[in-house]
Image (cartoon, rainbow, N blue to C red; front, side):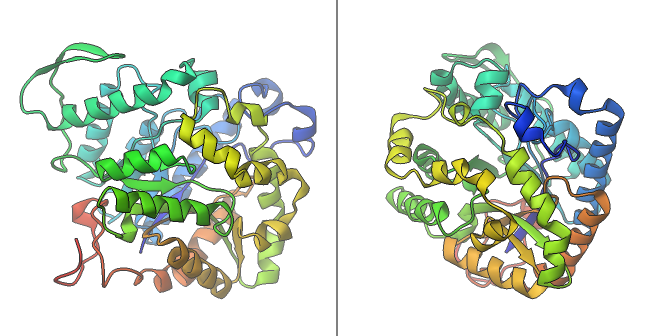
Length: 412
């Protein structure tokens, strides 16, 4: 099992009545009413400290991501974050998992190819290259990309970036959306032919097919547990892999899980209850129509969502739920080390996950509690998870220099 620490870098101190007073945490939340620039600077530095602490505690990877004009998670430039983390984790066997720079919103997309190559060089070949499509709030509303064009732009950008990393000669690119007379990338990634690619998604069947077709890792970003929406995603994803002739290597799948570890189950509730509720009530306070902007989904994904509206139902009911509901439904795994260990083992076996991402800072958690969570997780929980899958499979979607030593003859 490979375990990475994910961080959203959210606003940690929204007012108690935020979701009642404001339309959304995205786009419309007024910065000057809700935030102070100096305090935001402290959030960024806490985030660096927390991710570096996770790397030092033994996290296999540390994850950044990209969002815009919101208080849910404001790393508008994941690669700026990644450059600091690459330098700060020199000498540690910890990957930079850039979940990462959104392809359709970057013009031209070879900027991502260049910046990722820089990060791979600075880190000494430790980059995992995330290729996100981007949320409709970020790409359509904030960055003005026409929804119906978003996936076509994404696919063209994907092909251009891979060619820019691997081409030996100068080449022109005359695509539908991007026209470049000469492409000759400097620098190039240390990892050859290119860093491993992860494609994050939230259950779109077209993303399953695209990921399987290109033999990338599918990275399921879910806040709704693994027993409802995720079981349907699991079945469809592995069926899709089989259709493309791909093996059942569990490292083909990543999964994001919220986790809070404390000394006992009772203490975990005391430590984390209000922060979990803050995350689900405030952090996901988005008008539902913004999540389903016409054109953002392709036809098949839209049809599947209509036939299986479990995710929409979960989203609509969030504000009615309290901490015990989120724990019972496995939206978040909170408890003693033994409780969290057992639940994470069940998750990884049930979904066949080899690349686990844990969100150890949740909502309004203060810095000291986050460091406690990181320490307890990597001391008391992670060691029992690591042996999973290692005797049977190799993680081909991880920087080669950082792969756990696999026995001879394991499936590749």
